[in-house]
View 1 (cartoon, one colour):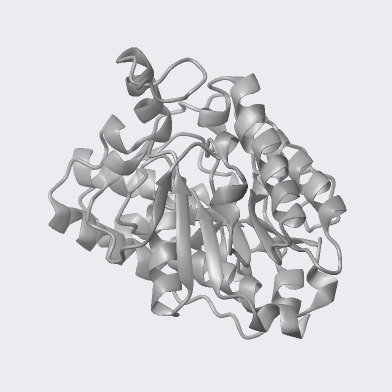
View 2 (spheres, helix red, strand yellow; view 1 turned 60 degrees about the horizontal axis):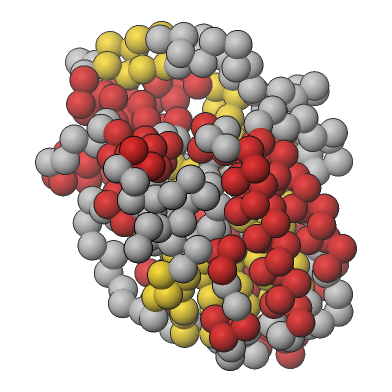
Length: 346
């Protein structure tokens, strides 16, 4: 495994132009990796600022990836998906086709081409409505949406592909927050900050009691790179909750943190999520075991302050539909820029 890690120089990032990808590719470049990127281009209009790096970019749907796209690649970081639960509900068959079928097809192709590592971005949303006070990797998953169900099935299928010469890293990520050159306002922390900036209200769409594990996009990007560098064979094919114990928050506490920096904003309970009672507090001991030196550099308070400052300076209306994944796709569909199968109309 040590030899495998030392040979990992050329990285393919799928979903490179998205919220996480835009941060990750900059860090990969800083660390002198050679990168190639694949992205459908759905969310380039979400740009708040220009990503710092330039790199080879293939504009392509992940359902269409072929052998030529993977030539001379040592490892894949697979981010691309119809990302988040509302997006996954747009069309279940499409979500399955993109988030599950295309993921497994890509991993099998990577293994066939002797690519050494496949790092998969999964989600703690697979826990759904947790049946215990705190969940770990052995807890029964309880996915509530098509998005989460596809992530869970993909995890199981990817585990079976892991072998001595094909390392599969499965990251059950906490809910991401923080500044990215391509902003998203459909993530809980970002959404509250965006509503505070745009409407002077910190909007809570539940009763405020659900738990969510949270992680800044910059910390998460560093963790993806640590998975590239890690040489522990026992991690191969193992599901790992990714985050920090101090990153578990109730929604009410997120609102209070934002309110500390924007005291003139009112906290408003909208009840928009209605019967959506998803709540999960997550145990990250396994992650700590394998990555004992990883520290949270961007805790919620620090990240919220940074996010407020950068979004204010951008002078963009960040609470608009432009920065919501689901709204962006629906706009493209209405304008017939995308067809019903979410391919670009040429």
